[in-house]
Length: 418
Image (cartoon, rainbow, N blue to C red; front, side):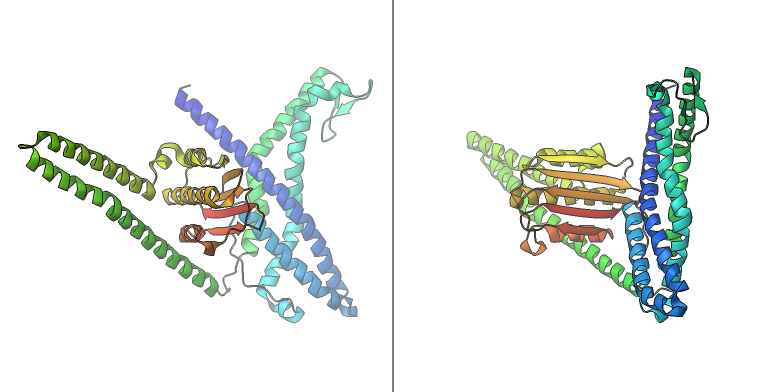
């Protein structure tokens, strides 16, 4: 096997394990909302059964509020896993209007599916890894029980009396691992499918709010683009252009002095060379400001590690980005972290900072935290407005939490399309 083939096999194995781990986390998270869905379903059923005697009419508003809250929680949970669900308009809570509302009917349909199929898949997502660990490690601990007692496998099939039985149980554990690796992602998709289909805005939903949001995003993108062009033009005009004009003047003066004052001409040439070197350095800085070469050379994880190493405040970076994102997304993430770390060094008074970046599905999430004094304000000229504009230009979201006394958390979520 060649080195390239070996690397490809390792990368495939790593991707498979990561996908299975993410699927297990999604299934277990769905198990939590599935138990809640079962409780809400029982509440709805009680309200429906007791409605003829009047008690159900009193329970109906609470049941509807619980249903809508759980649906919002499920949309939020899946969005954190990289599954975008466009929410519908807020459904009504009055009983008569709710019975005729398509969003409420879709949420009730999801409730039934998630409390049954979602609950079953969530239990499998929790139990299969536990069975895999128990049976794979079976030969290490099966003799630790009381003498004479037989030990069974995780599913109660088979009894271990000899080492051969223990090895057979370990092979069963390997089978559980294969099931988790092979079927885990599909089970997670199956568990999330009803939510993706039923909790999203239906075809009859008024999308005017979404159109307005996209219009605002487009305006923010154009504004950010114009601001960036003005910054580049100002950098070139005030920096490199002035340096190059100075080089031209000095070279002309040196040429005129060359015959009558060679020493003075040599001094002017040295000054011209110095000005040319400064102009070259400023041009490189402008180029790095447009798209840092370190992103192409080292990827987003390496580029962020370089920013953390240069930060005046000790900073830890945790990156989990198995695949490259679009260049515009990586550049936005880089500049967001660069501006955030600059703000931390200048304004926070923090002793430590951390940067966490993770790619899940088609989303890239950035989390920049510090233990400083807090109280960050977008209107205070700290660069947060520019960060928000960069994020909005890619249709991303930014959440800032900075209570007085700290800590400060900057949470950015970006679409990670290619």
